[in-house]
Structures are given as C-alpha cells and as structure tokens.
Image (cartoon, rainbow, N blue to C red; front, side, top):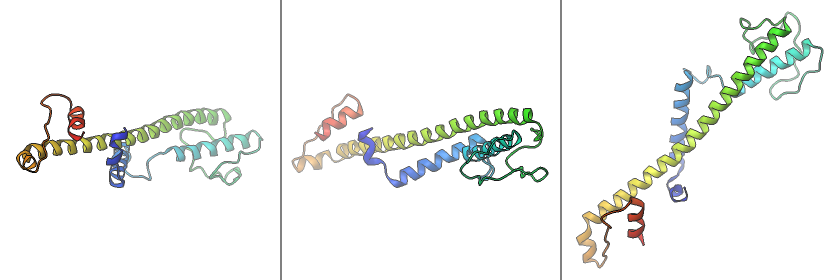
Length: 174
C-alpha cells in the first residue's frame, strides 16, 4: 500500500469517487439524486414516525437532529415522511409494523452506503497500482529502447530476464 501512495492525487480521488457514485446510482436504480433514498432521508422518516408513535402513546417526543420538536395535530399531520398506503396512522400496531420495516430498510441502505465507501477506497488503490505498473512498464521499455545510448554514457542497466515485475523493478532501481 505504501508504494502506491505517491500515485494518489486529487484528480485520481475525484475520478474514483465519481465512478463509485455512478455505480451506486445505477445499482440503486435512481434516476437522480432527489429520488435516491439515502440513509439520512430514511433516518429522518424513521425519527418522525418514532415521534408520532410516542405522541400517540402520550410519551414525550425525542429530540432529533433535523426535527424541531414538531407536534402532530389530529387532521393536520404532515406525512411526507410516511407512505400512507402502507401504514394506517391511526393504528399503533400498523405504525409499529411500518417502523420495523423502515428499520430494516434503514439498515440495508446503511450497508449499501458503507459498500460505496469501500468500493471508492478499492478504486483509489487499484488505480494507483495500475499507474505504478504503467510507470514500471514505461521504464523497462525506455531502458530496452535506449540501452545503447545509456551504455555510451557509462550507464549499464541490465534487466533480469525472469521474475516478477516488482522484483525486476527493485533490481533495476538499486
């Protein structure tokens, strides 16, 4: 890993991140960022549903990031955070069942987002390794093509005929 660090730059990182996000979008079947259901969006929906259930049960509402202590008043419930077709907001059992399915969806999306980060990291390392291999290949081709000119200047570099690229490179450089 340490030997490819010098090949990692801002451009490589940006390209790897964009490629990772593109694969993530395609894998999730999202047409745009707005209709991509992210961990943050589902967490917001889940926390709103939790507070709604807590209010139905007469318990105090949780303080949650992004939710400003709103009260759900009968008849004026803002339901952008819930699919009213899947859940009956007047039934505690229905709300709890929907909360369970939302928790499962939240966990699945969390794992998918972790996979995105891992894929990004792998792309960075793989691209850097490919750049390193290309540079080594260029060096070997240069030495082969300019062997006579290098020898005339008093530089005698012999490339071992067999062995792995890493071993050959180390022998040539040292």
